[in-house]
Amino acid sequence: MKKTPGLLLILTLLSIGGFAQQEPTDRPVPGWVSEKGYWEVVNNINTPQNFTIYFFNNEGTMVYKEQVEGVRLDMKKKKTLLRLRSVLDKSVIAWENHQAFDENKTLVAVALKGDKGFR
Image 1 (cartoon, one colour):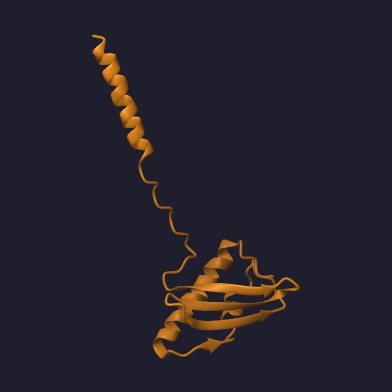
Image 2: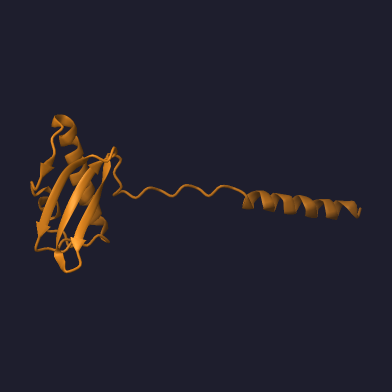
């Protein structure tokens, strides 16, 4: 009779230890992350309303570049990030079709027009 409670205690401790060793589950990927590439926003602290956005494909090749002046871009807004993803996807597709680098076609300005994250 005394062996049963000890055995149950050992089995319980082993099972708890097994749960603690499980791998953490993968975090879901945010909706604004593109499978086609990435972008980089460059601005100067002295001129916060002027910035340049570079768009790259997954191989690291620059496919589009746009300079925007006179506005501030709020990178914490999900809507802003989703619109940048849209411009990225369009730029990568256009680059894949004719393999030419584009610059300053105002794609970002048009995509963000009216966005509260774009002031």
